[in-house]
Image (cartoon, rainbow, N blue to C red):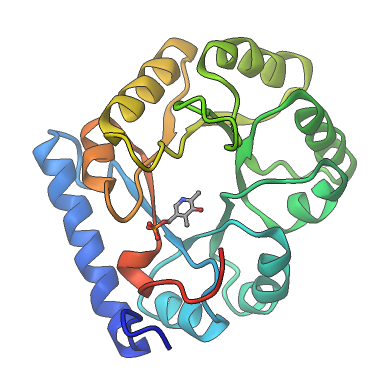
Length: 231
Ligand SMILES: *Cc1c(COP(=O)(O)O)cnc(C)c1O
């Protein structure tokens, strides 16, 4: 095991600490204490660790690998139907059927072909997971997300042509840059588009994200410890 990993016993206290930091950051930003919700990112973590977090009261989780989520979550969801599961990683157009079936929120809609496939599947099964559009605020070629200057047109396409339930924007800032300018850009775009939800901020920077208006922060390491497996 990685020496930085937390023992299972630490998960409830880590969760408490993160929740407290979120409350303090909301207060410092003059926002209501519950303005930013915690998405506990459980990717690579075993089902037992997730169960500990659920036991401790956590109800919103994020997974970035569709295949892993499909192995881990159906059994957990049977036990805890009130859990809200977010997909925070890439989707494949030919696998949207499984994604629409499993997830309550899809945070990574970023291209027309995918938007169309999601719309067709949602119509077919009459289940409509809320969606975020992922914006590649750093315009990094290797990263998913729509370019900021293409985001308005893409959001309009999602809403008007595909009637997707788009509720907000999501971003993952470049690792080697100050995240603040990326959070500010995402908040500005969401404001211009009339979108209420902003998914931004991870273990290292969720307090900054809350200053810039995050309504969901995605936190993994600070709760579950370092990830041992490849992401
Ligand atoms: C892994 C991941 C996170 C959580 O990152 P931590 O630094 O462990 O908090 C957040 N968002 C996305 C999209 C991720 O893939």
